[in-house]
Amino acid sequence: MMPDVSATRRRSTTGLRRFLDLDQQRHWIAGKAILRDAVERSDSPELRFRYIARYQKLLRRPQAQEVLEILQRYGRDCIPIPRRTERHYWSVSCLPSTPGKALIRVNASWMELFSLYAEGDSIRALFLVHLSDFTKDRSATPGQMDEAFLESCVKTPEDVGCIFPRGEDIFGVKVRGVASIGKFLATRRALRAIRTFNLTHMNRGRNAYQASHCYSLADHMLAG
Image (tube, rainbow, N blue to C red):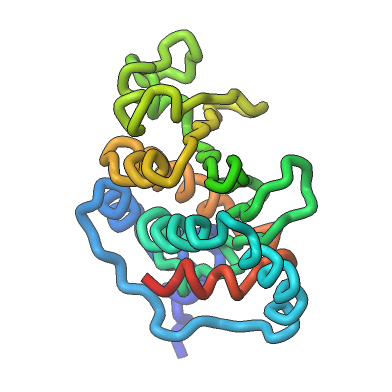
């Protein structure tokens, strides 16, 4: 009996290349492909129960509805085949205990992708992206930051800021208020940058934060 070469190749391939070839990934980044996701989700009753108290605590926060609204949009638009890759290639944490007091955090591999924080009774977001997707010359040089473009992605210039975390070609975009977060997600170039960064880290292999996955939050992310 001949060996199943394609199955062997899938097992030896890391990241989302097990499910999506490079052309499919590029087309999804550009918004030119609708990817076929799994119908059913894997579940872990133990994990679901472990974080239900944190989830219920989040629901009592004045920002809860805005958090769930943005999370659903992020899950729909920013994560490829989210049902098939849930927990193993990305995860969402509820009120994580790491520094910063985030309300939620989305991770892949060893990297934070996206976080939401309280901003008064509203929220602010932190998007991790490649710096080179926001510079005028496509370099990873902070001095080449395209500030005019960045400000055009939000409702008012005061709603956007930036940080430079450690790491090569990594840039943090801080966006304040649900209206500006929504506009940022709707801006084609910004969305393409988010998708590119997310795929970069999902392709690095299995998610290191599987044990902190909150299924109750993921229910909202995958409801769209």
